[in-house]
Image (cartoon, rainbow, N blue to C red; front, side):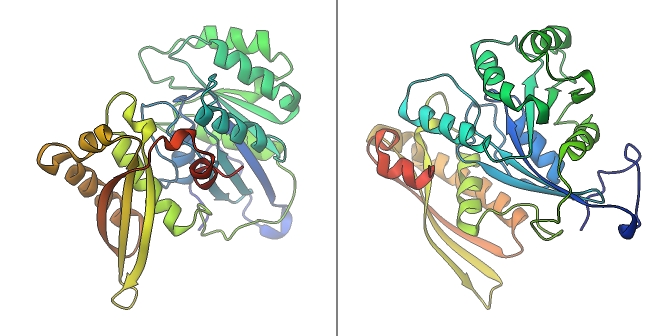
Length: 315
């Protein structure tokens, strides 16, 4: 169904014969933890992408679909643009840069609670050639640590080509300013028929959604560097009881035996906690009753192995 986020802030035109619908591919870009995934989930009104205070939890280009009376926006939530030479981070940067090539709009999300640094400078350089189709959202304005003016000065210095009418202040978490950002993106998007059904809010397949739900619960419960050393391998997915139940066998994969013990926890408390939280989320997402067999295994040094990286983050 069409989203109801287009309310008082939008010019309504409900006569389908009197207007031309727009469809646009939108790449969301910004430093890790700027609020890109939160924006996507709020705009789609569904949990499409992992939200975590831990940087670079988004690894793939996640698609979320917003349907309104204006048309359809297909958002691609790219991994946070992080300056690092590690193999995994280089792969994530490549995902981000690749997504900018064939899109209609760019949404650049800036965190107003952090002073712009090298990552913002690199990001601004990356999107400079796409300035004519870029909208900027200054996020987290609801935070006590928000400092908007330094962000605006940074934008003026690094991206002077972008007009003020395409720079917005928002709180993705509190759903403040989202409508204005969407309207600006529709203004840029081309006139075209929808690419997806109006009932769709993502194009992710079943196994990927299950894996991301489990990984999201795992990384929010594991400390320090360990979340980045974890991926989820979906071994089996079966529909049972005439399609009423979904049985899943999944593995939380880590790089070392010592990490395996951390994920399992004393008396298996940690893995039980992750499983319970994952089940709660999965049963909220899907119409089936989900049963989950969750185990832990070691995939030694997977972040440095092309085979695993190609499987998790296709180029």
